[in-house]
Image (cartoon, rainbow, N blue to C red; front, side, top):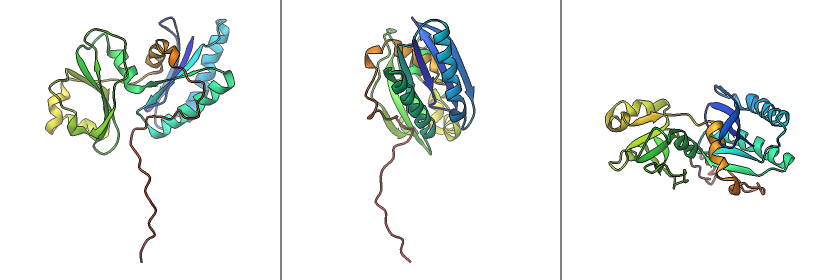
Length: 225
């Protein structure tokens, strides 16, 4: 069994998978709910495993890109659980899980998109032409006008705020009809993690989230009066 969580968006979800099936799932949606909902959901998942007579083999988490606060809460909680239960933690990129959930409905070259802020997005390209296992691609962080590409058959991701407006007007309209809106979920994280058991991490000190925005440390400059 694998216990997985996703806190990369406004959805907080926890799931238990075993041999390709989702046996348990809890989720809720709303701003600032992760710190309230995640621990109770995980407790329910652990109790489910115990009641079924199985110990979880590993934990899995959506590692991003995604919400800065959501990812920090999720990773800190799952690290603590991994240490206390002596379990490996499997990090799964958010768009990997999204691509997995769409693998039966989309074909060809597809581009997963996570809106960041202003006009910036993370995106990564997947080949779904032969229904192969989802392989984590290279991520790009650019303005959304870099998204349209004649070599991409379809796009998918979470549409939010100004990004939705861009898709409905101007250059974004060229991909609007090929854009499939999808949420990440703990269920998809768990299913992907089942094929990545060997990627479980025990030494968690250096495991960091893929944040929704790139941050640069800047030298402090004293104000001039």
